[in-house]
Amino acid sequence: MKILIILIGLLLSASLLAGGFEIFRVGEKFIEFKVIKNAVISKNCSRSISKCDAYEYLDNPPKIKFQKEDFLGGKNPGVVICQKFNDTSISIGRDLNGNQQSFCVFKDGSMLSTGILNGLY
Image 1 (cartoon, rainbow, N blue to C red):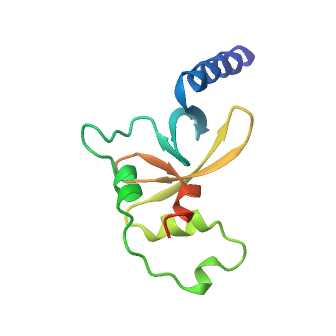
Image 2: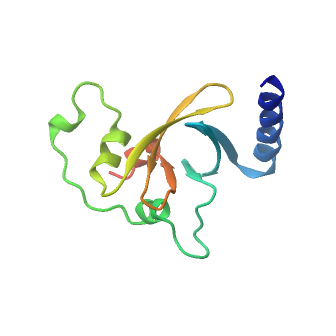
């Protein structure tokens, strides 16, 4: 297990040096994410071929109506926003340093950090 963690750490370091990638453990899987501006988006998501749902929502956020009550109790605003989208769920990931990040998971499996959603609304 220690060897696996060291190997993943080395891969993470190399990918970060190569240009803005992060690895998160989401459930039992290690998933690579691209870091674009302030967005952390799943690496399998591409703007060039056919847009994935995460980029669609990032580029053209749907109009959403919020109530004051939606944000009461210290709720994560990005999670609240994601839950307003159709066919989405929330997953929590941990990077190799143990830091947590919440992700909005779209129906096509693409993921977007919920933190970026705060700035869209």
